[in-house]
Amino acid sequence: MTSEMVNPLYDTLFGRHSGNASPFLILPDGSEVSYSAFLAQTAQIAGHLAALGLNPGDRLAAQVAKSPEALALYAACVQSGVVFLPLNTAYTASEVTYFVENSGAALVVCDGGNLDALTRVAEKLGAQIATLNADGTGSLMDGAANQSATFATAHRSRDDLAALLYTSGTTGRSKGAMLSQDNLLSNAEVLVDEWRFTDADVLLNALPIFHTHGLFVASNVTLAAGGAMIFLPKFDVDTVLAHLPRATSMMGVPTFYTRLLDDARFDRAATQHMRLFTSGSAPLLAETHDTFRARTGHAILERYGMTETNMNTSNPYDGDRRAGTVGFPLPGVDLKICDPATGSELPQGEVGQIEVRGPNVFMGYWQMPEKTAEELRSDGFFITGDLGLIDDQGYVQIVGRGKDLIISGGYNIYPKEIELILDEQPGVLESAVIGVPHPDFGETVVGVLVAEPGRAPDEDAIMAAAAGALARFKHPRKLIVLDELPRNTMGKVQKNILRERFGDLFNGS
Ligand code: MCA
Ligand code: AMP
Image (cartoon, rainbow, N blue to C red; front, side):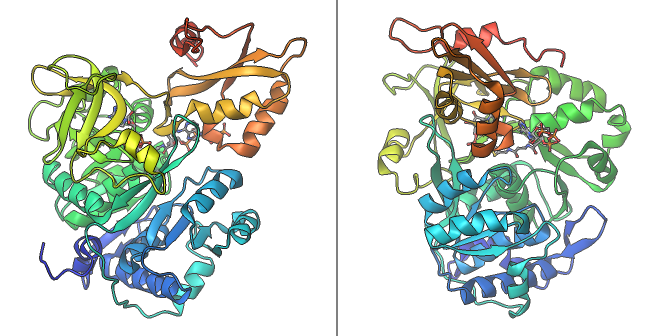
């Protein structure tokens, strides 16, 4: 890294590939996008953003399908100093409204199919709007086509805000995690070293690019190493198997691996050329790790991260990748296990709250100083809300969550957000939303309801209300009506009792 860099994140991940004609993206039809073509498109988009009046520090909210142009939009934000705010394509217009309003986004980029709904949102909130469709067409690219293929990279420092990623909270209100250039860059560089990525790598990326995993872990690591990425719009077993022969490495959530193992074509011969499979975003069952190893000969490398922190720990590249653990803290990351009540560090082997500190840890929550102060200590340690221990060989194990969170297929779902909707429905006195084991998604959402006296909850009306308000992946897959919710002596709902009672609902499904 040299001191004359004008924009460390852009220069290191993107700018240094200028003039590089080798492939960066390999698309489902086998066609390729070279680094130089990608950077030319990036510059054109950056030029268009500037022409629209966006300045460094402005926020751009993007709810767009995964495409090379969508990735170039991220790169263009980095080049022009605009803060990138990617949004899950499953979010409803009412969910998107909150993010646009809270972030004060200057521009919303959406799929043409959502233009009507989101134009109303943008107009109300004073944002501009542009479209980017799954096939790379739309008003954003029309505007970019009129721009030069070079752009004067905006000056940024390592401490400048690069991205805002919303993460739900236990209160039901999402918080924008502020990620600096250095948060992203330091983590990408560490992971390249730890996982031995080089320009010879071809990473199969079937993850969405609106979250940390597919965007920062997969894409930034590929860019930092100068390798290529098989860039699939979504995870689909047939497509993944068709592209695997060209890949050297793959990153996935546990559901990717259980779905692959369900297919007999996924065997030793199909994977023997691979050098690395990594897993994260949700717990990988030790059983999946073992089955994968027996079938393919590969030990999946499990690592642990969060939106607020990027990656914190990883199993070793060389050495024992231990099932049921997330490995060791990455270089530069301090990790300790603390007493949840007092915050004091616990002895090795004891279970407590995981806290982390390092260059990867975010700057705080966007315009929420109180929330930031609750979770980010003044000495830099972030309270993750995950419960874990460090074993006698230094491996970190996640044993549970202190926070009320469901992880379904790698997507985080905060029960509170769903309970707030369920509680409002006619016939519902109160509700408790729990996660129960699910063979495909790891966990899935179940809504437990108590009826108002003399009235029965109308399940169809409830599901319709959920559909209008919440992304599909958050919808309860089952509603159960009970006479009352189990409570402790303090009156707190005992979700552990509900989870035990309904833990078998999806077994064998
Ligand atoms: C889709 N559906 C889901 C999910 N995804 N429901 C619950 N949980 C989900 N994750 C819905 C669909 O809308 C559909 O609804 C039905 O479930 C079945 O869809 P299906 O075709 O099976 O789903 P899919 O399109 O194949 O998607 C499943 C998936 C996907 C491939 C597992 O969810 C995925 O790519 N997940 C990865 C998430 C991820 O990247 N997380 C990283 C977060 P209907 O019933 O209407 O048909 S970053 C992170 O966590 C940290 C930082 C980290 O450590 O990485
Ligand atoms: P998010 O901030 O939405 O990306 O989700 C982060 C959360 O995902 C963490 O706090 C953990 O609870 C969970 N998580 C990520 N990786 C793993 C893993 N390898 N094992 C268990 N949980 C994980």
